[in-house]
Length: 437
Image 1 (tube, rainbow, N blue to C red):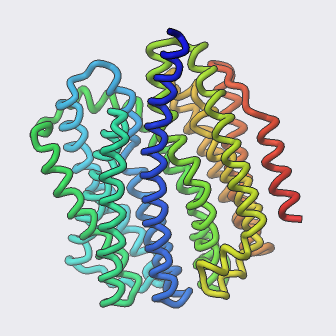
Image 2: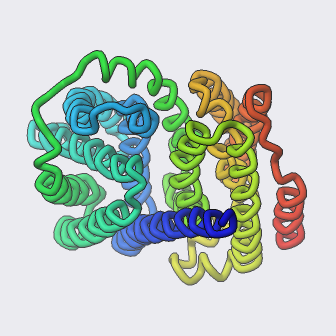
């Protein structure tokens, strides 16, 4: 009987992970295909502008959402009325999108000499649509994740990927400029938003439960710092490169190689983290701390075994992979591959290793760890990029990730001790070093 229950539970986890994996694969393919379209359509200096537009949008929307996604996952299991929760979140995000638009416009003005964008009323209108649709779609997809409805999550992720590729391709074909990204993405996200709103029309109402949203934001705002800090650690080096080095094209080279690594590592890390957070939250609520620790430690081992295989492939065949996907001049950045991989590995373990902090409502502690990583990253970027170029940016990024992981784990183990798979981590680092040499 116990064996049947164990098999049933693990089959459920495997099915969810499969669909999350498919959704991640589609999302990674979409981002990768869009980047390839721009890389071959534009000169490296012009593609660098796309990189800055894209990364700033990601960082701003993640910060402006105030971590509501994490709060929804948490409150979903607290017995709240689901329709009230969803409607309140939608209303709140609409207000927060206005703030995101203001911040994004400030960014465009600050970098107008580099990006060469003329601010107009039409552009402001497009940016409002872009921020609102991106942030709302993120929350609707997160709603399916909170429900652990991995099938619907995958279907809408596929639709989102297909729309983005199609519409952005049409814009780049006709405009042939970096602004094709802004216009194409805005239209694609608005189309997706229309279909999601139609499918959820019976669950939505014009209702704003302020006490509920206030309670969620009180819990979730540190998550905004955590998520946006993660994006800053991943992407802020592009801005530092553009400011500290004379050659604008270097931003394009660095982004392309980094994106290739994230796309491949994300095939494992993204579905794992999408699955593990709601899964261990539910297990902690229903079965307690001991069962949760065993659950997380077991799945961490499976996760790292897959990561070892991927890092072996990436370090051994990095030059070949770059040559296949990008023009020959992008090989200039091949030296950053093993350096960035180390940081990405520790970042991939972040959500599972900090389970004690996530489940006991201590997101502020996680935010402190993330902010420490950002501080280390920016400080090292400032000193290393002028001296070591792209390698300096990669070193700063990896040390930032490692610093955040070590401090966060130190805080988390006092509450819920989840033993890291030290042996597998050591094997992985050895694989990277040996392959690199």
